Length: 378
Image (tube, rainbow, N blue to C red; front, side, top):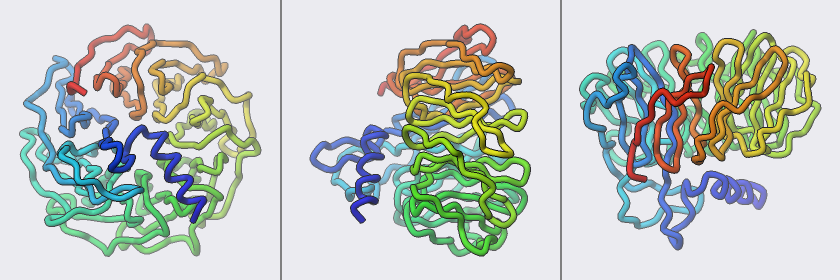
């Protein structure tokens, strides 16, 4: 119990106010990632709005959509009677057909028209779940997400009706699910990685794979293997079919694995809150080179552009990591706190900074800022 409380308090400090108690009157401020679909970029701003941007003109397609406001049901330390009504969005929105799906820290999932921004449905219809930190995932006509109540939910993507009874883990879930075929993989603060049948919600493995620390990062599925890092400071590869351990990294990192890893040419690149990227052989888990130091915590998930791994540190420096020689090069110093996952479309890397709440579009080859847009006044 003491260990779990200690981890909870450390995460609160790390995230800079997901919720820090009533006395401080701090409010959660999300750092949404983004997604580009058919020339439109969707992401959540720090003032609780869904932003839609035309990537060709770099302008908003319409006024930002304010998510339905509701006070959070509480975080680690309980809820506060606050006057703030902003809905923090930490997860990346998901887009399917004509709908955009957004998870709110107030414990609701929203489905909005991608063209008009009109609300199609909200779940739950009445009341709130516990805070939703990870993003939703859409597959086979369903919306999947994990919740701080420790449950995994599956909803009908068109109507928002619950498809199957929620699967319950032993602690809160902050991880975004990973879907591969008909299997959903998700980590929990109960230290376990779960594999669920995406159709029925039933467990596929005889038992979940257990580490010695909470699992908050989004799993990566590659070559029938699930890759993920843990708060126990180790990185894991687990057989996707049966859940048996393929390997655990020999090296213990200096801090927690938070960001989703990327893979290129059978090599795993895993960012860590110790400010380093660990470069591991995907088959054996052995280090290919010494950890590459970026000198500031890495909580933002990196992306691949060709053979380059793009990494940003929390202090706002964006780097390229050449996979041919594992040499890093500073691409751009934005000088602004950055925790949101990077995202890429047609060779352009997008960076969502928190201070100020701004979206930057960067040329990967030159580091030139192609355009930037202030998302809110925060």
